[in-house]
Amino acid sequence: MIVCEHIFKSYFSGDLETPVLKDVSFQINDGEFVAIMGPSGSGKSTLMHILGALDTPTAGKYLLDGHDVSKMADDELAEIRRKKIGFVFQAFNLLPRASVVRNVALPLVYAEMPKAQREEQAKQALLQTGLDESRFNHLSNQLSGGQMQRVAIARALVNNPSLLLADEPTGNLDTNTGEIVLSTFQKLNATGRTIVLITHEHDVAAHARRIIHIRDGKILSDEVNARQITTRSRVEE
Ligand SMILES: Nc1ncnc2c1ncn2[C@@H]1O[C@H](COP(=O)(O)OP(=O)(O)O)[C@@H](O)[C@H]1O
Ligand SMILES: [Mg+2]
Image (cartoon, rainbow, N blue to C red; front, side):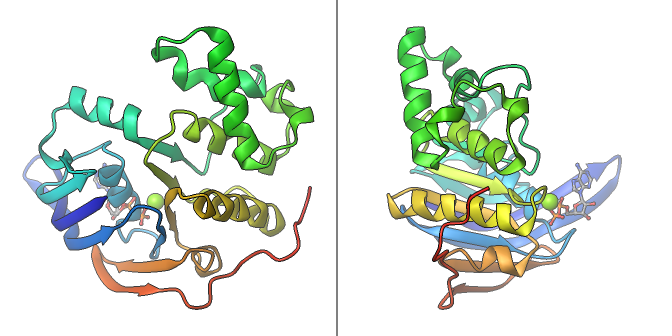
């Protein structure tokens, strides 16, 4: 579903070129759970922006579900993002004084759909994250960090995207709460979701089935993670 061929990305300021991604190639199949891991400054977020159709490469090809994203104009990028990609970031970016269900239903405002149906779809997405139903009508600022991130995951899922992209999703969470969020990703993957998780932490990447190491804009290794961490006992907040 994802094909990256010889991706290069540079930032330009005036005549000054800063090369960030230097010939990156890989493929990700439907249903994989892949971590992209590397130290700060290695180009992870730059790569995520390209995978997420937020930006296009300077050179090289990126195909998502057969669509050539590398050549798309801004309006086409916006459309492919809306249809195919769900984003989860380190910051939860929820509307603090809106209810959990309203936060999750928000991306559906653009779909022509009655409010009751939007809320029903939001609840379905929330149920997939394992957030307790008693929280659904709370305001999002009444939740713990781990609960907020599960709401953000539900919001990313509500459009039923083919790809879930998460950039340092546990960066604002303590280890135990991070485990809950990572086990949420594992459960979603077990039901067939394709997930790309970006992190600088080995302990986080270790939850994925495959780990791509990047350093200084190049792929160092790309391997099946034989020692995938799976959460045995369910930790609750
Ligand atoms: N918009 C930008 N303009 C110029 N340089 C940038 C920009 N974004 C990132 N960079 C540079 O690209 C390199 C990689 O950044 P980034 O992709 O954010 O890495 P990571 O997410 O792995 O920390 C860094 O050296 C950073 O300073
Ligand atoms: Mg980053």
